[in-house]
Length: 272
Image (cartoon, rainbow, N blue to C red; front, side, top):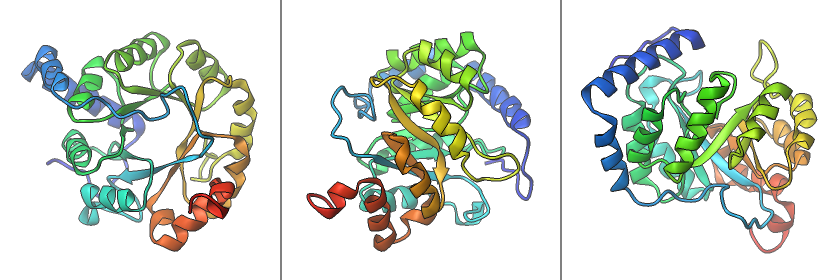
């Protein structure tokens, strides 16, 4: 599999490469054939798409192809997914578009088959063909970025996701993106904002955006939480789910602390 090591390409470079990869796959395998494969998969598992909600903040464990702590030499998506499942996370999210890497769809299929919890494709989705591909690979949800997609395409991809019975999570990081995202009636809004030149969550911006989201729309923190200080900071935002990096899911003590911060009533009583 072609990879790029020791190099962090720009988002524009990754997206251009992604478009090329998709064009190559479309030329090789017509979308009708991928749809047929998708129709053979088990029904997508619900993830923030049901009417009822027990008030618990869901934990989504994030799997990343390459970052400072988990490089390609130690990358094990299936092993990580299984650890998350044993830690009783509610879902896993796979992100492989941090670099120029063509194996993300294969990884998605392997992870989806390995665990019996919903799997979210967090990679850049740029075409309806990819939505059908992720469904054929077993994903239950796709994340769609309002900062990457123009309005017409974003609307089309939300519709395509829902036609494939998947949860559409629209990622928004400012007021303009959020207003348009809400007009599309997605299952979930993914609040996303980090501080410039750092990986820290911009909690102030997300706190400003949160009241704009109506009660009937689910809210997910789409940027991964990496420290317990960040967990404390976002605990008051009244989100339905947060994405968590592996560092906070490393052992049972950390998991218990995470749940205690997110769901204190359950941690102190009915659920640990």
